[in-house]
Image 1 (cartoon, rainbow, N blue to C red):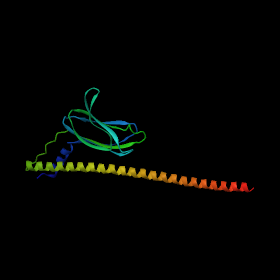
Image 2: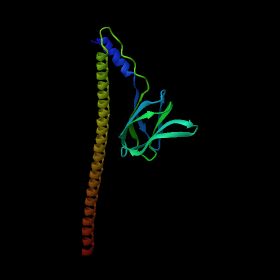
Image 3: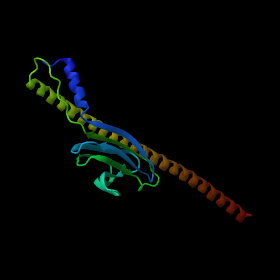
Image 4: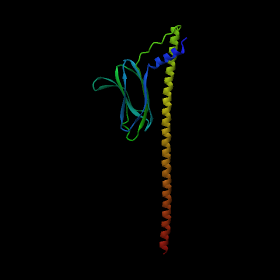
Length: 215
């Protein structure tokens, strides 16, 4: 049976199989920003996830570019307009630099917060450490268990990000509704005060005019 030390070693080996970057970026109005990752092995899997957590209609334009075969001719892998979120996995057919761009040029006044993650599986899986008395069936069983756990953790992480994004959107909607209610209430108070002043003015004019006619 595998010992605890071999189990930890297996965890470390599987964790190095994927390199990931998770960031939150604030896009100002009329801004276009790109992020880069380098793929060293052809055939590597690239996972790209993003979600607009606040700002405007919670949408953004995005484009994913692959390595240019010729100078000035970039290859578009993924693109979309006015998307709230996206979750993609594609195969890097070429070695080189991949560019992930977000475009907020359609927005004139609103900042947008974008949560995104770029994960690259760019390393070959290492061999499980052997130990005396451990059969290949036991090693493969542990490996499959760890891979399943890794997949479930990844799913939970994505779900947490999704619910956090939904929470931010709902909170933004609540704040917008509160602001509209406050503005409407303020306008109502101003109109009531204006109507009261107008009524007082009309009544005064009525009595003043009547008094002048009597004299």
